[in-house]
Amino acid sequence: MKAKSIKGKSTEEIKTAFEQSMSDGFKPTLAISFISKSLDRKAISELFDEADIAIFGCTTNGEFIDEIPEKASGAILLLDMNKEYFQVYFEEYPEKKYREVARAIALKASEKFSTPAFLIGTSHQAADGEEILHGIEDITGKQVNAYGGAAGDDYSFSGTVVFSNGKESGNGMVCIALDETKVEIKGIATCGWKAVGTEKIVTKSEGNHVYTVDNIPVLDITAKYGGLENITPENNNLLIEIAANFPLQLQREKGDPIMRPGLQVDWTDRSFFTSGSVPQGSKVRFSLPPDWDVMEKVVKGVENLKATEMPEADALVVFSCAGRILSLGPLMSKELEGVKNVWNVPMAGMFSNAELGRATGGNLEMHNLTTCVVALKEK
Image (cartoon, rainbow, N blue to C red; front, side, top):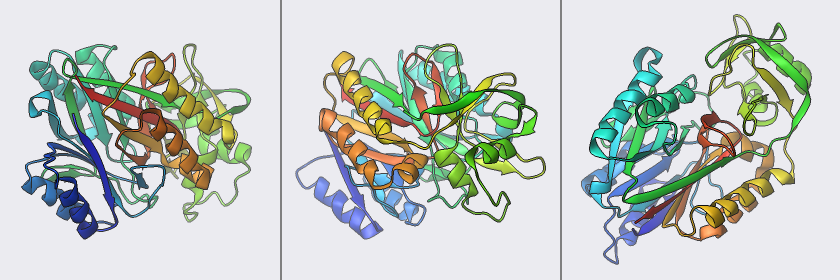
């Protein structure tokens, strides 16, 4: 499988890069498209539609095809994968039926491929990505390879979007099902954020809606331990600060902790929604703002993936949490450079609102403040 990554800050720039990519006879069949809401994603999608290219698309909080993070741009990974080896699905999830919708997609994929793997994009801040993963596991089993991320909106909290050929939704999912007998896919989700303080108990929660921790509204206890001020709906930077620096760390008996920052506040009771479930009665800790070790852990994790499971790759897809670049700033380029250099193949990625993958020693879960690196190779 041949892969090429292109980028641009306008439809015209992307069109030019797209045409140049095909000047040597390259004929892509799939476009993994990470596009800022500030760009005309419909016009960009039409470029691929006209060339009969399947689209997996997400809006973003930033994009990249190499070590340089961009804003207000498009980053696209073009693959000439055999069309018999993949299928793109697009579905909305009305009434929060995340698990049911995911089950239906997984059932279709299982009818088409004996061993399907999945690359997933989700939209809507309150979407429970963990329920989506559970729905896929219901059909395919817990051993399934599934990775992905939640779309962004340039940190505007105005609504995220996933899209495919002629379709888009702010309350749905786009999914590539891969025939794993023909396409090898391996991934890793690594965070590195360090915990601080003692364990605390989640005293009231429902799914990914966390109400109280130690019988205190979760927003208030987060503000207390983070030293946050101006905890009001008018503070437009509040959610960014909580997500980037002071997420909850869900403690587990097996595997690394899972990051659970607040992504959407219910001001009536000062509760918040996270990207994945936080069971009532579970234990959580708060986080320290990150340091250099955070990036080193990600790169070492990817190097270990290559050494132990994926010696060669044709292309990389990366979902890196928007909170990472907010916290790490210019240092983020060092992490991206380190990831890129592991295989040194075409790469495209986005800064996402949440990440889907399997952490070290853990199960498939929804993550935050995490980098999920996915390597692909056609057999």
